[in-house]
Image (cartoon, rainbow, N blue to C red; front, side):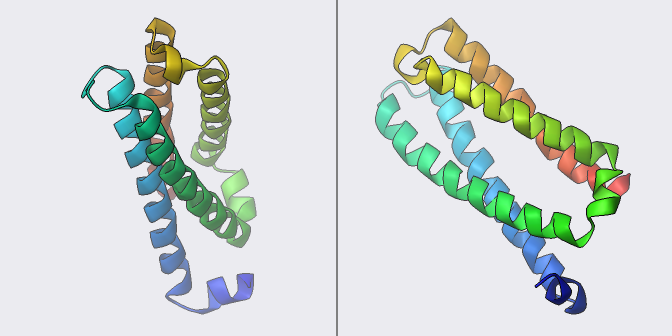
Length: 139
């Protein structure tokens, strides 16, 4: 399969498109939920919005992770030596830890100050993940 990704001129770019679609689904749906947690559109029920947006975000993460692993496999040595890639991986782990803390404490039910802080941290981490993802090509 890796040979097909490097042999066909459209394979890797198609994989990048799938990766971007996954990122868009993930970040877009997290942003909608983040805005709700920050207090925008309070008439939207948080739990119903969370079910929809987190489900789509999970699909996006699955697409991004699968395509990202395939892209990684085609140039693992170069990426492991790339500081932007390493930072992106660390930030992804931090995003996962932050999400676990957010959901583990029941932040969607509480919508308190800590929920807002954790959502702000999430927003900042994902912006940095996006930045590192773009930066990889230039380092």
